[in-house]
Length: 537
View 1 (tube, rainbow, N blue to C red):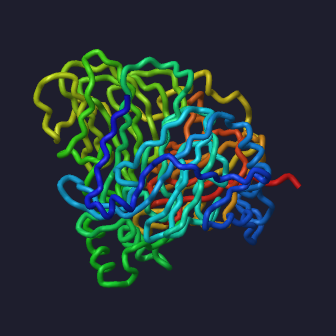
View 2 (cartoon, rainbow, N blue to C red; view 1 turned 90 degrees about the horizontal axis):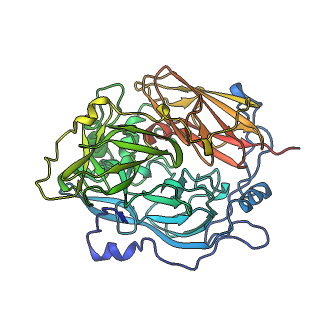
View 3 (cartoon, one colour; view 1 turned 135 degrees about the vertical axis):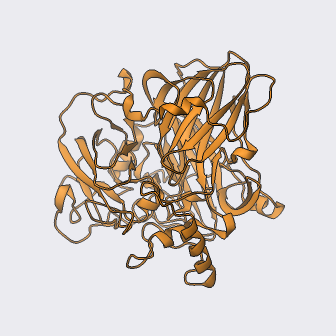
């Protein structure tokens, strides 16, 4: 049993435009070459080989790299799964939603917020026929999935963006169970309504539970008083040469128009005075609902509930607790951990936690409190009996502990990386400041020609050193890494100010892979780069 709250579109015309996820017969792979076929979208170019000699800390822009659709990628895909093909249709379109009593214009997948869940089994092949009905180009990134490189959704790296009115077939195998999600990777589109859960079930599920509750937590500003994420990005980057950077720049806010100026003024009102927080999002949501319009999940006293927690926010970390209950953590970022019980969790942008709870008798708030000084909450309810619901502003006492972060857990023995010294070490200094908004890695803002070289089969260590006053959730596409000292397997990890975190991963998925801060306003302003597999020549 899975319960989700998704807000219906307002207006039949818009509802007809977004078809959501439906059965479809689309195909995406050429039977002979294994290459992707796209309706109206050409193949991505081969790996960029930009000018210049190898740079500091392993940075390399001037050699031969595996192509996102090369034979190495095709070969790796063959080992991922031979199960049935599960087919879906996904449409991105303009939408209107009721957010806390305010009707906002935004973009979404189909007629729901969050978008309709994709649920498959480990070993299945997934075929998603994607249709772009937005006024701007977009892509779909399958966050947390160890996917074939040309299906990763990184614009100008693994594919060309899907233009307005065009379609693209995403086809890939999934070989591991886990809690994941999907979202765009163009500009700051993530800070609209374009996100949804991707759940890969384990056919031999070892956990026993009666119900499942998928919970997506989000911060929201799009459409509030005419605001857009692009206007916010423009305001943050206003003093930089060329303005906004990243994978999309300015989208749909009117450039230098009077409307754009008004939106920029509104953006300034949402900027935080706290140096640890950049943006004050007006709303915080659980499954598309503000606290005043809470989702209610129903169960019986004594029921065992698996809650899959996903932080889909653009710029907010959350401390999460279920009032009156402890949570037993079973997974982080889709990978099992040694079970540990806690009263609350700290969840960064892009992170996921799976927890088990045994429901008590009554009505209990599931509360996500924004970290830092923002001090705002999203909330849903667990109801197992009669009684009045608690006030929407209630803060469960369980939040007082501050919440366990993922680094406090240990990987389960079944997924722990083998002990091995790294073949390659890459140092990544996280640089920039709130004042200059010059976010970068090793002092170099992102360009499509950046490469940090690795070779197939290597054990790679990345040493993140946060030299800024803000903390950054660093996300690696196409892989999972291990935190130090037997820590959990993850694809996203928190790096605190003035701290170092060393993560190890096995280079077993060839291609060109994005690595970036999952604060979307940091990454789109320069804090991202590419790990590239070198061809052996």
